[in-house]
Length: 451
Image 1 (cartoon, rainbow, N blue to C red):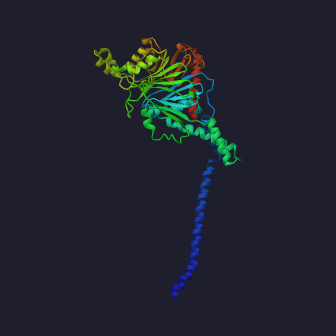
Image 2: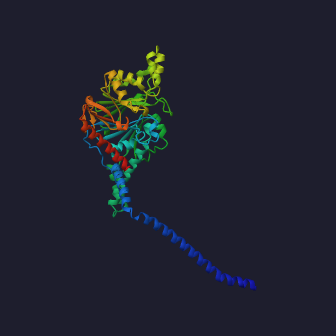
Image 3: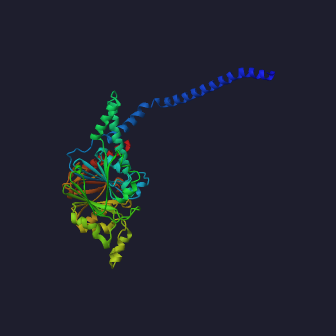
């Protein structure tokens, strides 16, 4: 061994331990620094911890109540329809400073079963604000594939998943000392009793739109899927206590297809409720859409206006059927189509719905005028309109009770510039009316502040 090699051995004997010592020291300093940073962050929030978790726990409590196993509607409650829709089409997608450009859908309740109809933008929000819960939903019915009628379907299925998950968590918490097998058996039993799977009824276009992610074989949220064809009768299972669906042919382009959009008539223990769905009017083929409504004679009809087009005003100077046909709104009933439809069907009560937001301040005037010309009782649809099916009693927000639909009037909330409509009995005392209106605003403000 050379002198140089011996010197290297000596140097390494001293250098390596020194280098390792320095490495460990730096590592400890780095870890200490990490720990110090985490401590500093926690200390920043230490004084605010109580307020922090008061807010978090409050919101979690509201959500848990919304998804728990208890229904908001008593089993013996009367059958009713709730309008939970404000505007149609694209405007609910756009941001709004006031947050009042809402879409929505409808909710029908009958003898313990709740059916959501066309859950578009903001449906879940509107459903929640009206005091309903996830446990109230047993089925979803969709007339066509446009997003303002379908977009909250996924949210509903997600909430059903959360509903079932909450049941599992409750069982696991209560059975901490039980074996895994005991927990599993209890979970299976409770989910069988209180868990939820929804039935889906959808037209061909909607099924095509969602078929890629409807995992039916292993789904814990979906019970069954029924594809609804136009002009067909569907008798629901005994669990729905005598509900039959009669589908109608709608003239509406879904982008996916233009042949399978539907309207429908529900026969609910002899009470018939009709929905036109989104449909244009065809002067030459109007009997296709109108005939089922004439045959089944629904007492209550929800008719979708859509909007009003300038071409409709050319009708007064048209001299031929071809010219008249060109005046009608192509994709919705519009002013001419809805007037013609109601004149031919003459329902006892009509809810004119599916307004474009451009008609924000004109809904009441439009509907009042149509009703006056046709001598029919018509009301504009809006969130918070609830109708008892057996006698068509309408919920009066002033009296907080259902009253004869013939005596119901509509008030446009001036502060909301036509965005909110209130339904009440004729000529209420102004002091009482304003107090009820303030209470209604406070309820919505409370819900909004908690979200």
